[in-house]
Amino acid sequence: MVRGHGERVRPEWLVVVAIVCVTIGHLPLQTDGARILAIFPSPARSHQIVYRAYLEGLIERGHQLTVMTTDPFPTAHPNVTIIDWSFAYQIVTDNFDVVDMKQRNMNFYQIANRLRQITRLFLSAQLAHPEVQALIHSRDAHFDVVIVEYYQFTPMYAFAELFGAPLIGITSIDSMGMCHEAMGNVMNVVAHPEMNHKFTKELTFLQRVEAVISNLVIKYHIMPTDFSTFDRLIEQHFGSNMTRSAELMNRVDFLMVNAEPALGYVRPILPNTVQLGFLHVKPPKPLPMELQSYLDASEHGVVYFSLGTLIRSDSLNQHNLNLFLEVFKSLKYDVLWKHDGELDLNGTTNIRMVRWCPQQDVLAHPKVKVFVMQGGQQSMEEAIDRHVPLVVIPFNFDQFGNADKVVDLGIGQSVWMERLTVEKLRERVIEVASNQRYKRNIVRLGRLVRDQPMRPVEKAVWWTEYVIRHNGAGHYRYAAARMPFLQYHYYDVAAAGLLLAAIVLTTLAYFVARFVRSVGQKLALQFDGLHRRLVASSVALKEKAL
Image (cartoon, rainbow, N blue to C red; front, side, top):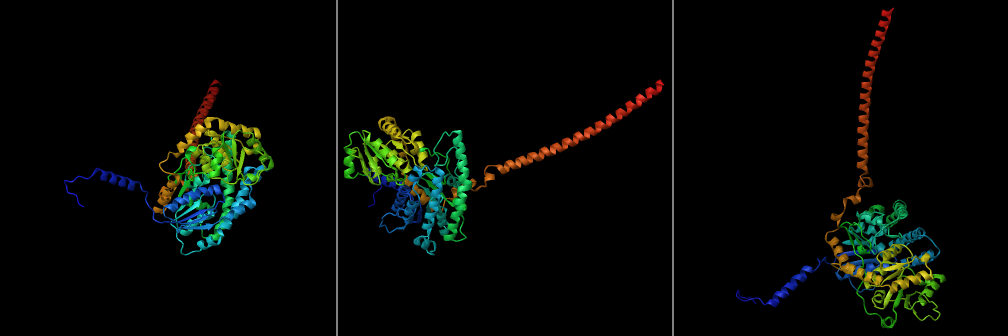
């Protein structure tokens, strides 16, 4: 129906048109059905939870995914192909028990070296997987982008070169310093130490010394050693013409770091890096009826205790188990303990043990007053989002830094496992549960990190599609990232300046010396002539006198 010039448009139609225009204007640019290869080698469920949330976002956008993961998820989606690497967990279980090593007082470097050995084992097994080998040797496979867990898993970066696709790195926690450096981001080991350190900011002199020495050991011993091993894996599975590890580290087009700056991850970063944080956190869902009833019925509130997915409670020795039991049974609060085995509670009525529970949903319950945990970043993010103060007992890796962050932010307390006593743990649990300062601080922090223009998953998906649309992000590459060390720190310029100064000073000294010599010779001649005249005069006077 065509309206005449004199007929007015009804106001409600103008509203409809305006809504449609605004809606269209806010729709993200679509990258139709891109072919994506996603590779997540680490056998760590807390890390894989983050990547799972990211993958779900990509699936919702209609992309075709081939996923290599240690945590395959059930899906009937026709666009998703999963290569099952879950066997890597058995490799870790058979060779690596962080709780046992901690209880035997092994230091961080001993544990880290053991983990490096295990990493080589599971990477080798993953690359030898029949479906992976079939993909490597396929002549028909094509991908628009390769996404890889961006730690030291350089053999997996080779897939991007194999398929001629842009490479995106993603991490479930903050990235290693060498990874930031490869992207061109500033990595000052004193301003932001490696995440494995037991300190965060305001370093003492000795801590600064430790940070510098640790960085030098990683850069000039650990990584060259690992890269040598990884290069053999690359040659074995991809051929001798494939780029080596050190160069593959620098081939990453874009980096997505699951680290929220407000939690103390502030650093200068370039446009080819985005910080996410809270990537896996979702709105709370209703609890199972039994758990809901248990939490609702608590008179004084609940202390929730879980050591995460890597550290099993049944790996604790009897001394530490008894310590936790003694503390928990002395509290007026109920205690919900995620425990993987059987434990005799000796008639204790305020402790309830569960093998598994929906942690994000439990933390959302208003009766949960304190979360006693091991310092894993994902658990810490869930507690912040749900406004539950923390008591952190760090075991290893980034957990020490996270424990320090909890204390610095005023959202909880911490105590190291090697210093744990009944009195210290009880004191911290009661302090955090009863002092409203911790609750106020974590509520404020939770609101702060939620105040974002888009959800972290949406941000990650948008940047992924950006890289796909533009076939990489080379236009964001910082020239200094590939600059030789001597050039980056102006040492060549300084050396040239020193050389020039030396030449000028040497030349000046030469001419000054010549001038002094020339003047000296003239003065000597004049002095000699004067001396001869004086001698002659003296002789003449003597002759006259005679």
